[in-house]
Image (tube, rainbow, N blue to C red; front, side):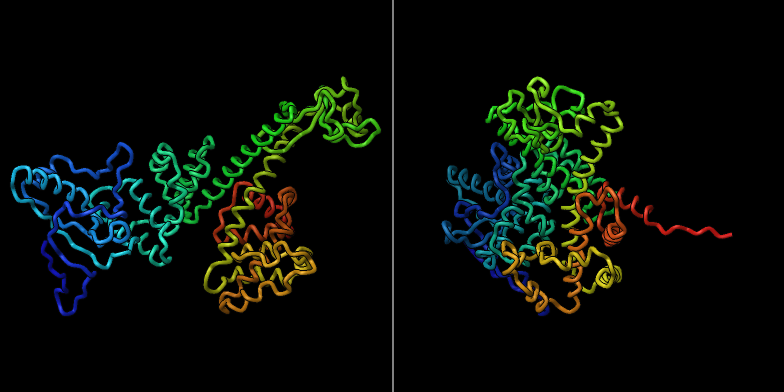
Length: 511
């Protein structure tokens, strides 16, 4: 083996790295553990040399230098191949054949990077970069590298630098372990849909849900068409899918629990008022009290139904007349009324749909609020107008919110733990945000005020029933968020439009 130190070529130049060039016996080299090319099952992923490469090396030797670095740990003292694995293996085959033929072996040229000793993140990045430049790296290549990088105990700046070298964003590095859980089929689908690693991780969380891929592809397309880099459509679509998945899991849990107790689970109906089955809320006990599941459990008609697509449980009697139950006075009167019309039933279904959509949008909206409160620099004019007009206004909502000692929402919007979590009223922290105020730059103190104002709007104005009769304060809040770049969900956009029309100043007629 011979080695030559690498020096700057000009007086004004600087060396790119610390290392030296040398010639090495390929049989003495090992594969660096962070060489990203790995055999996966029956797929060698290009780690094995083809016959053409072996023939070339036997004839001319290896001409392009390998990149090596000193190994530590179990392979301490050895030199590991960061890139050039196929050339090394081809050189080993050529060396073995040369020995069999009684000929001298050819050494391989290599650059040894002393500065990469124990610097795993940079070694990994260089391994991927080499192959990206030589061929189109597979999704698995980048995913594997990002997953390894995410697990390395290195600082954010180094991870950011390595991510940039890999051609991905820092948030994709953080998402890689979740994305790596995708099945092979789902990974192929995600790749075909041009999902990045963050989107792949999101898809993995709802992978088993029927139709999830189609919903996410549609949302991504809408974001691209709208030029929405904040992925507003994607965020709402994902929230709806996760809620649907959560509901399905809860329904399965409930059904299994009922069956384990031998409680029949029957089909839900929106028209029980004229049928033989009735909800227990329509019945009274033997002495006229409200009928409960506990009071009714010994009745042969004891059963339960689940609202379709929801986790709402309806306890009922499958034949209330046969088992001698009586209706409440209000239900007895309603039983004499005409059967529910399709319009009435649709109104009931609409309430259920809107309730769920409104609650689901809340999660995405609050995540966006937290992002607003984490922004750097000065607040824009619209934010100051909102803050000052809310604090100095006469709205009952702000007064009620300010009088309550709750700090959970404000804390979540500021990205911190709630100082008063699990603390009773009498022992609550009097100045919960004192440390934050003391350490926040003057130009960013507005974020504490925005968090407080946002908590007021979210708790007092945007409650579950707010969509039914939208107030001016709700119009103000949704309009502000939209102006700041928040992508309204379908139900939010519809309710805002109705609210603007409702609260639009009337135009006086002039002669």
